[in-house]
Amino acid sequence: MDNARWAGRNQDKDRIRQRVWSGLEASGTSIGPAFSRIPNFAGADLAARNLARLPQWQQARVVKCNPDPPQIPVRLRALYEGKIVYAPVPELLKPYPFVRLDPDKLEQKGIQFELAATSQGFVEHGEPVEFEDMELLDLVVVGCVAVSRQGARTGKGGGFADLELGIFRELSKLRPDTPITTTVHSSQVVGNDQLVMMAHDSALHAIATEEELIETGTSISQPRGVAWDEVQPDQYRDIPFLTTLRERLEAAGDRD
Image (cartoon, rainbow, N blue to C red; front, top):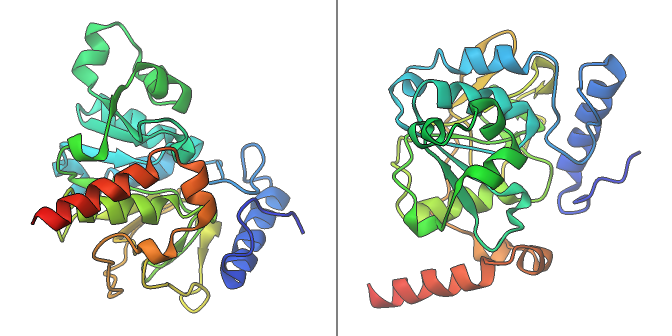
């Protein structure tokens, strides 16, 4: 068994991730290595096209999308459709957490959308922003390793997506009905009984694969904010701004 980078936090999810990663590599479906990452897959462009069938996507002006390779077609489609894209710095390793991509400004600078849609490109050419400076998000795309048709999900185990979503809720950057979505390969869709959601986990409203668009109609309760008690010591250590962000949020709460 491959030793996943964040293994050990939840053994049930560890097993599901290992099975999905192994299956993607054994079938030749993954593009590049699958283990310990949001796996890229053959058909990611078709999944992005299916996501774009979602009415909420078509209506969205501001989209947040995870930084991983399988979502390059999602970010690219959003830019070509004139949407503002917020993308997190991979693994939140910079002093600032997000960049803002404005397709009009990119065009004015002569920066190709194909470059800006990659993680290296958007970190270089995007406008650095803090969480507090972000606009209200119309639609969120998160990276997933495994999902269920009822909206359960797991990422690669680092906890970045749920942490981001908790911060968005703390700062009122999400409406109660803002759709949370993903694109995955159809083999990453597992049985409804295989993924157990924790209180701090956010559920999916829509899943796009290379074959279909799944609207989950999820009944899973969404967290109201950051479960700070669940934040791991290594997250505080490895994410440069997390401690100061918590201090800012708590100070703002004390003033209210």
